[in-house]
Amino acid sequence: MRLTRERERRKWSRAELARRSGMNAGTVGLIESRRLQPYPKQLEKIAEALEWPIEDSERLLDDDSEARRCTLQP
Image (cartoon, rainbow, N blue to C red):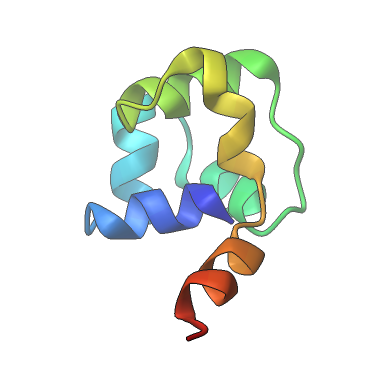
């Protein structure tokens, strides 16, 4: 998930992202594991914390594994 990749790129734990977005670490974990669909306002808070464009916040939920595979192939 792009959200996980962006969080890890910053070397943040789920707890750190939760703190910065004013959420619970468990909620962030559920969102990252796709067991919880976030409300739009929750997604906006996460996007703000990650300095991600709010208008593109839905893209944080994308599975970017296909894009990474394409870039790794010769």
